[in-house]
Length: 407
Image (tube, one colour):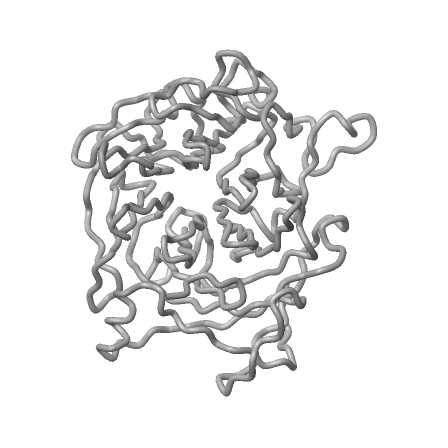
């Protein structure tokens, strides 16, 4: 999909949210910023800027029901804050403002920031996990920091072994203690995202491990979103008795995020036709492998339909983040971010818009930082990308219209 230039100039917003970036700017370091705009009018017209004109970004081949009315318009400044990483997969923030970053293939947990040096935020290795088997799409995947980290120092990781995928609980410097084992393992479709929800429970995404029937098997942990206590037990209120399963019928979910109304959203890899954005409801079935994309014919009403679908060539989105009213999805094969505006009632307003298309290659993870900016990781060294000398990188995005990243 090509991008045409717009006739409307836009304002370049400054990256000022983090103190380390202000120190770098005062020291005379150059911060590369890239300006994008998203079509529509929800955030108002940006101001003129002598730096030039933003691209007129195209709409995706989305479901028509998601593209009616409204829209969003804002600019985003992008800076590279870390480089030279090896397939960064998960990002989770510590109370001091630094981030823990997993590397899928090296089994390392890195700490990125909050201190900086001439290359960006300082990167150091804080743990290397034994027993991780990094084969295919498996390895050291998602990471979550305990909401009670100040007192319990606990970190949660999702990782592959030679036998299965697991969720482990650990203190940095110590070996993880498995709290959930037996998640189906394959060279592909391992899921792997873990996040604490607004209810304080841990949510875990799993893939069907290339065994399609697992997604419809309530007794299997494959092809599901799981919800659990920090000890790995079924969370109170789960839809199925004595089960970790929160939702089912998933092929491979790798991105989850909650909006202001505490609704759960997820990105999902389709097979060869449609990738999806779903709003997740407890106990609901999202159709895989019977349905890819929206249900038709006799399957209508049996499964929950996605709110947005794209051709897999334009998406294959992994990470998801919600900053104020904007949901962003980081896409691998599509090599872009999709941005979409959420409504108070839990729908999508207007057509999703494309950001960063082809600029940084494959994009894996998106997460909201404590200052309201969005961190995005590239995944160009995963065997399917075209790595550049600085890859893999972590990008920091500051959205001007939505208020993200304001100091």
